[in-house]
Length: 115
Length: 114
Image (cartoon, rainbow over all chains, first blue to last red):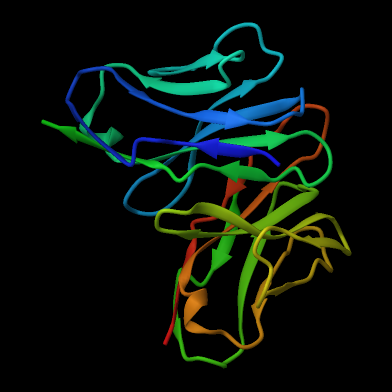
């Protein structure tokens, strides 16, 4: 069965600094996708970035990038030049191809940006 | 606008009183799913559906029912709610295909069972 581990329950970062949120995963399936979602205090789940297991390049979306290290089974989210609006809960998730198609989530990291 | 619509946003009920949380998507997605979110546990899948009339259990299905009579709707039914079902619930949908499609989430339903 697949598993996602986020070992940082909470982080405090100074505004404008870069921040890395850790995520490791475990699966024996060769085809999978890794996702990051942001959940602000309002509660909705906002998709941030996606990395496919066969993608050669690390994914980037604006200030977000995914540091994908396949051999280490890690998929860390990097936020450059953090802003106050980045304060939120962040979830790493994995999805396998075929079958259930479900997302398996980590327990999340609460990021607080300090002015 | 492409979206997943959940209702209600907030719900307070009492033990044993049947309730339904509705979910509707306008993106013609085959796949729909329900998750519950609890502190320290992340999101866990309750039920999912790969298409009309095709539903199956997720990781935590006990105490819940679902139906998929139409492609766009996927209601979550609690026949006899209990306090341990107090949680934040999300409906999600996506396409099914060769690429791993992202899930689109509804706004969530905060349920309190007294």
